[in-house]
Length: 419
Image (tube, rainbow, N blue to C red):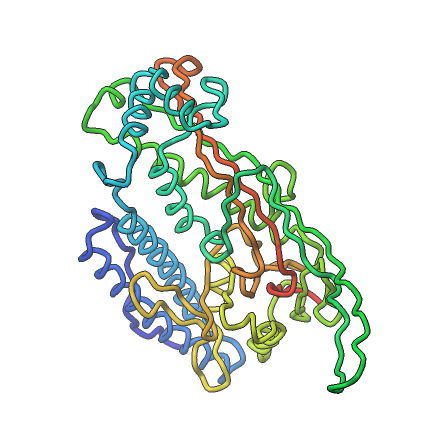
């Protein structure tokens, strides 16, 4: 057995103040150092495989230990960046409706509905008062949307459209009009009309119910809008993240993995094409990167320009060990603080709701999600104050309506770990 090289060990990043520029920069430097350590250990493992067909057990354990530490550091860095990026709600901004803001704060703190009733009556709102809650100020709705864009992986790369109705109907052409070449003086026969079909994206209700104590609501120093948005953002993002990937369309958006799939050679509209690895639950033993290249070039050139990989952290840790034929790692860390990691030159988005690598699992998606997946937000976030159901706490039943689904079946391709 070979002696274990004394490679530097990585250490977990402690979450300190979560947000200082110095802390983020320091965490990023430690993350890059950890990746260098990972490459050294993995190179040693690969050298041992080449020399004697199997790596030293201690080397394998070291690679896995450093890989896990690298994942922990990346997750911590993401949390620090998110904390730093959270915008202040900016009390006193001239763009804010002070009347609505003050009325909403009075309602949240003391349950006084009179001012909110007057505001929504003047705005001709569809609000139903105490039965359906009251619309939050526009600024708070905007901040919730901005935070969701950072927390929800698919939302961050998909197209997002706001609607005022319950359903967005989007027509698309099944067959275009007949066209052809003609001479300057030739007759122009009438062309056939285009055949249109329709995609529908209904919006479904998503809710969160944060609880507050009476002392928190009585504290004038507490920004209740900031508190509500911070409380609901994670709950909304987790539910959205799962629905945009695996949702069945019943009372939730339809996820991209809920659509029928077909081998890319037999692709047709209405289904997502896939490339198979040829091995159940694994990449090929040799030239594993070839299937990734095949997946990239299964996408038309017009879509590749804005393409991203989507996978979970466990799948990413497997691909992090791969090299091309020139010995370069296919996975590369972010080039700067706040940037995305890349795989084969394309951005990589982590979505924990993507399946793990398993037999016949479509664990990797690749495509132009801005053209391929549509998120539909119905305008208006509502809050219903409930001081009765969980005494002595006050519940805030917060709802928004959101839908989603694939809008271009040629823009997203999948990698299937099977034959």
